[in-house]
Length: 154
Image 1 (tube, rainbow, N blue to C red):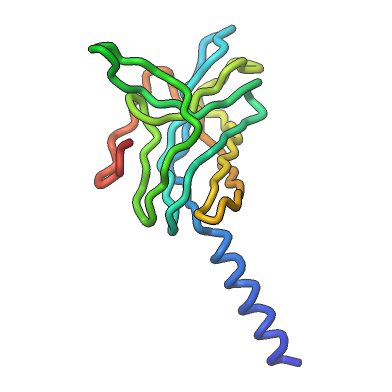
Image 2: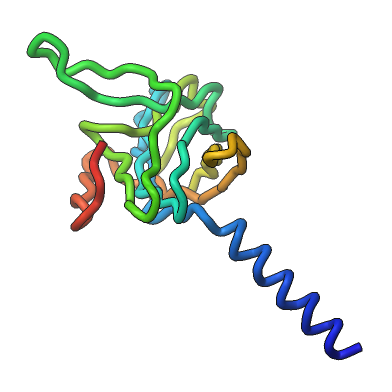
């Protein structure tokens, strides 16, 4: 009986470890002014195995998308992307000026100090999808996150 319980506990721990393949650190959302309808969400995402970030959602916005900033003909442009690669074991920094999350059709003003739930959809090499939900801190309009040492900027 005790041995069976130990095996069940060990199996449960292994399952939890398997689910914890993707970690998200320092998630935050830029505060908005009244009636502003868009904002950005930023964070560092790391996957233990090669994966791809393929979706994002939040109840705070009517629509959330993965975006990238890139130079095109000497002009910085923002565009929607279908996914962001997560190389095995390497942090990917979702930040201003690179890949990031855009929140559109905001349902209300986002105020400094609040939190906003953000759900990321990650697809592994076998095309299996899983979700990770984080509570993103709303930070002031003027907040600029420092670049993480060693973070892989896309």
